[in-house]
Image (cartoon, rainbow over all chains, first blue to last red; front, side, top):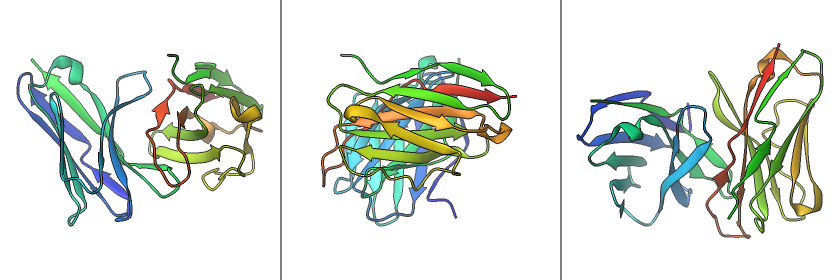
Length: 110
Length: 116
């Protein structure tokens, strides 16, 4: 099976909260990341969480980590049209190589 | 400061030709990674350089792929005898990772390779 799994698509209304979920298999990963990719652009690091934390908040972004269930989520509060993008969940292995999920396409509608 | 840069931004080539893709990492970053993003395969790790150590080539899909990192800075990914399945966006990332510590990877804008 895939090392990192994400749902492929999320539609959300402007102003609502978005929640993107991710599950992973490697329990030894130290850091878990969320990257954002806008059309035609590279990957932009949004936020990351250390594996001994269960929550991290950064402005409109909240990351929740359930290490027991190997579940990571990203919540975007007050979603804006500029948040429309593909969001990738990733973890780094012991050598720092990133293992990515397939990405969740978020579409924000007015 | 300057981020990771890659060139060219787009490359169209004919099947069977060789191509070279360049990556300039963030100054001072010791670790450099190449990834490939293609439809149906998502984002795949290709190769990793850390300082003067031998590179981790475990992600290279075939012996047509090779990479060098000269002087611990600029890296070149070479694809020989390109095939249509090599069409993808090739992403480079760098980090200031030191042994035992995982640091954030910063990505370049990528090179879109199209093999006709």
